Each structure stands twice: as structure tokens, then as C-alpha cells.
Image (tube, rainbow, N blue to C red):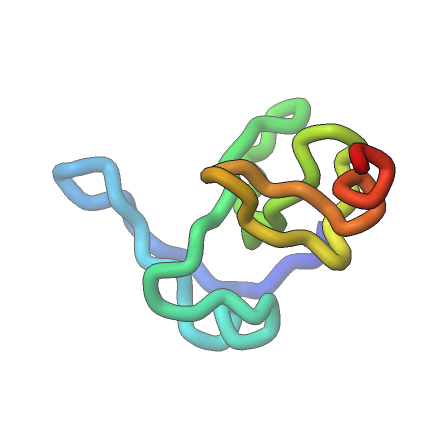
Length: 78
């Protein structure tokens, strides 16, 4: 993990502010979805990448009836 030297406090509602420099470097914009999970003794925050419900691909996906599906899986269904 890369140390940034940035320290933030958790507010009374349990929130933290992710610094703009980190959001810009990760391509996280206002209202973007992020994934939060634990790995060993660390909390990991990363930009959410929607993936195909069938194969897990993140490229060439479309929203089909409120589900994310890649074009290859759609072609295989026909």
C-alpha cells in the first residue's frame, strides 16, 4: 500500500472526507459509486466497476433490464 501522508478524522456520523487529490488520481467524481471492503487489517476504498452478471467482464457492458450484461454474453444468448 502506498502511504500518502494525509490524515483525516472520522466525524460524529462516522464519515471521512477523501481528499480531492486522491479522488482525482483514482478517477472518482461526485456521486460516483465506490466499493468499501476490508483486507486483513485495512479498509480498502476503490471506484466501483460494474460487471456482467454472467461472466464478470467490465468492458463493453450495457444496462439491460436493470442488469449489467456484456455484449459477448448477449450475443451468446441469441
